[in-house]
Image (cartoon, rainbow, N blue to C red):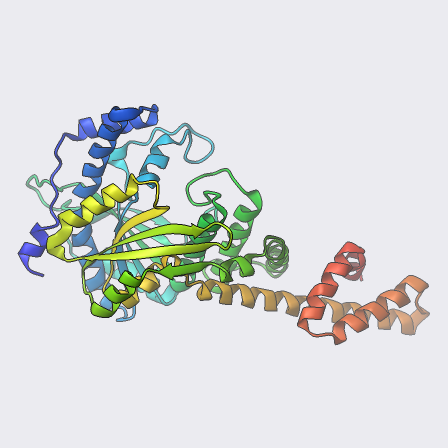
Length: 431
């Protein structure tokens, strides 16, 4: 990459970090009016300051990822202003301790992401990054692979300190960039959570309160993702119990239907832009989303492309969009092309097939477990019948289970609801 393209990404701080932190504290304390706008300008400047190290780390990650597989998707993004503000204004980040986070110490203002096929590629990429002789050094590793977070989130986070290995002072020395490594399925979980967050307006990602049922659904979905990818294996009984709860919540919340109805309308100008920029390598993309219809969950998305020498224009549009009420979401991103953009940010393009396929697999497993339980119960009843006969209730149970077992999967799933409501399945499990 030409030095000029790197230089164009450099955005120096216009005020000291001390003043930036003071602005962040004023936001936390509820400043309003012009003083709030002035504070936001300082926060935006601090965010823009991360653009240059973000490009450095994205290129470092992309070069390393290609050694693992040419199919690895690499993307970068600056943290959205509403998310930064939300993080500053929250009274607590974990539900237990008071929020004392400092803006200048936030590790994920700038973020890169690599999406790999499976855990083998993920661990290989992690090893290559750790062994890389880079002037930018990993200062913290957070592992959510062996056991997902309480939210169900799974992945690996590497926090880099830029120019940490440089002895002399450097304007960007010590600036943090967070690198996230995810498998395709972990990424599908995360983006589906964001989709439900958007549809239901329940702040699953940024708040510890809200819908307990949706939180529980994604928590156990995360456990099942980890189990399926053999990152965190569940014991047989625990696995069956988790799937049972997953299916119950899935049906109650109507998850698959809601994901399938998530309707994205890409603007005509965006489609033209995509056609005229089929490769669009290394350009910036401003993605803006508007909910055009509250009734049918239809969203309108516009994509605006900016060349590297248009960084100022891209940042100005981003900053302006984030302060306008008409947009539900604005984010500035970059990938290796349009196809990568859609894979890295499927929630902006209405793509949920990865996660809905995962859901289908869990529903099929649940049916399989149910069939096995019914077959076991029938064998037990038949044994009891041959030894000393059955009472009236046991005869009825045998007939019910025989009928259920002859049905198709849909019938079996519906019959399970009846069994549950009549407590017959508890009898079944005791046999």
